[in-house]
Length: 340
Ligand code: 13P
Image 1 (cartoon, rainbow, N blue to C red):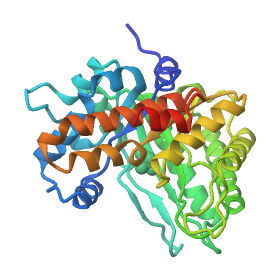
Image 2 (cartoon, rainbow, N blue to C red):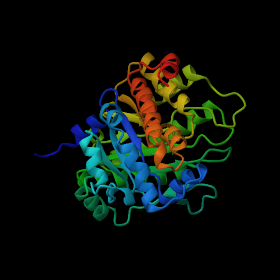
Image 3 (cartoon, rainbow, N blue to C red):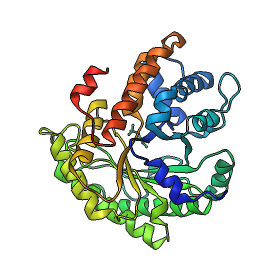
């Protein structure tokens, strides 16, 4: 049976479902493990991720796909089952992070461009053979008074579009992620301005490079105040500004928008998504592709100890459920507390 990329993209944003971003690089997962006092060995990383993927009910009902890292897509569970097969058995789609990280952008102090295009066609073909049906590439755009430059936005948009076109050639749905960071003291209007410019640059390049929009998922930041902003916008304002900014910039042919959490608290990330789905009528599905906002709670509960696995799975299931509700606009603070 031929797989249609349109169908995979739609399945990634199926009603009430979203994506688990479990694609932390070896360096990033070490930082997460350090924070709970766990050693970052290959077996520990496997055990932790296997525990998440075996949270069967949450995986089956709330998670449409899982983004994996190169090491993880090749790993087997303790009983020898490939982790990819655990994900598929839960009815979710395996995905793969393919970028090689954000590096200093030449001639632009303080700005970054994401690398990883060389050899990407061959790597995508290998990942397809390993079971990946979607991929992720993250561009990182930092804000201060002087940045980002137009140069930075264009360089990153160009790379994202080249990556996306190669994915589609390989039978893989690209998630395009131009992340405007929420670090810093900028206000929500400044975040709007940069997000709007980044998305305009991205869709310009996607058009120029013949990316089929119906076969791609956008993973943006929300339009939100910087973490150190003195007066941070509330939930309704974040929802309103985010939807308005996306309506101005994202073609309706894109099937779904799966937000990153970007350092928001677990509950903020859920509340913002639910507010958007509850109050606005939009052309695309609005869902989640959270890393930290799905994993912070289970990571804490686990603490690197196998005897805590059931508690960690319960914590993961809870966050997955809350975000599933948010993806249809049905989450509330009461539900959060009554089922915690
Ligand atoms: P966060 O939700 O933790 O921002 O991670 C999502 C992700 O995949 C970043 O690339």
